[in-house]
Amino acid sequence: MKAQTKTLVALVVLAMAGAAQAAVTAEEAAKLKTTLTPLGGERAGNKDGSIPAWDGGYTKAPAGYKSGEPRPDFFAGEKPLYAINAKNMAQYADKLTDGVKGLMQKYPNFRIDVYPTHRTAAAPQWFYDNTFKNASHAKLTGDGYTFEGAYGGTPFPITANPKEMLLNHLTAWTRGESSTSPSRCFTVTPDGKMTLVSDGTQDLQYPYNYKEGSAATYSGYYNIGRYVQSAPASKAGESILAHFPSAEGKTIGLWQYLVGQRRVRRAPSVSYDTPDSVTSGMGFFDEAFMQFGPYDHHEFKLVGKKEIFVPYNNNRANAAAPEDLFKPQFMNPDLVRWELHRVWEIEANLAPGKRHVVAKRRFYLDEDSWQILLLDGWDAQGQLWRMSYTLTELAPDVPSVVGNMAWGTYNLQTGGYYLNAATNGAKQFAVVPRRAETFFSPEELANVGTR
Image (tube, rainbow, N blue to C red; front, side, top):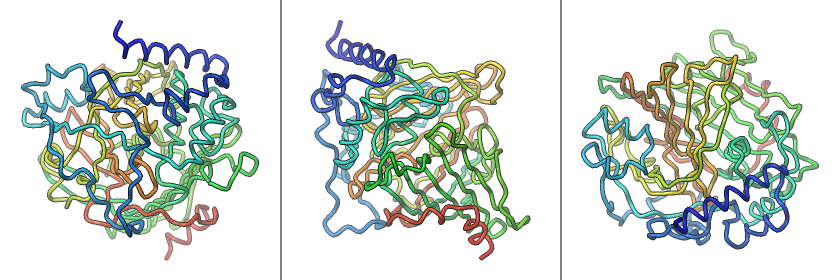
């Protein structure tokens, strides 16, 4: 058995033991300071060195940088190591997801340029300290969709439980305590037409990650956010508000303001496989942010850890002019950066008695940040249908690698794709002082919509 395989097996066995106890022992948690990163990834690189050791991530913001300014491509001088396309994909098949292979099969001129791997994911020390505490105290509640005993850090850094992994994704450190960002959605139709279908402002806040907060003062809602649309003119003022709980007994809050109705209303349909109005129906609401809203219509199982090519450190793509990035059939391969990283693979299959048009999914979670980087989807006939992705932004000013921006989906059956929460042609996201939580209330949403 290869040394790397032994390491992965040992991690899974260890994590299984922790999952059975709902929290790991102090001895197991201590590995977060030795062989594991502070968030639970493997510190060591892989055997051939193509994945380096984690050395603390990338935390060097440009001198004088102010949040919201364009972030540079920190690896602009690098050249691709090699390119993969339909002609040579068999050589790399074990490191390509079905969705990426599907794109190559559908479009022979599609390729991915593979660059040197940089394990840039990072978080503040206080987040690491809380993660260390959480490892020995966090427990699943609410049939595995909520948790207790954790605050201000990754809840389950050592685990092989897929539900715990998804909760790690949902509470991942990304944009600090609070942020504001342009949020643009571009679609490219099967005939190659690129359109800016929506433009607006996205404000996100993370009560679970308030630095000076505590489990005693925590509201039970890990993420509160709102999106206010400004274009096209026919939809200016339309808004969505979301409150997502991590605590059992709290309910998901979803509201929508529609200009024609001039009132805020509960919007339970802003979830699952309802076509997402922001993407002109090309995407589903639960594809947003790589996972949005409730996800109890599927059952989950861990496939394991593997090395695959994923979009990573994509500052260049996120700063590109829309006409340069969005090309017919697929995004400009010259601008999208791919790297080899270790990920956790989770398979989701439709639960008995439930319905969802995407009957099967596979999630690929970054070992260093716990964020979903790629997501494949199959229809009820077992045909590969969708490939979702995020163009992660390296933001050392936070510090973090941000996956809950610049996400989208390719339709592998009909063609066409979209990129949502994009900043192309606009400013980039900015970390801002924490807002009063009334800023994210239904009453304030109504005020914003009527201005």
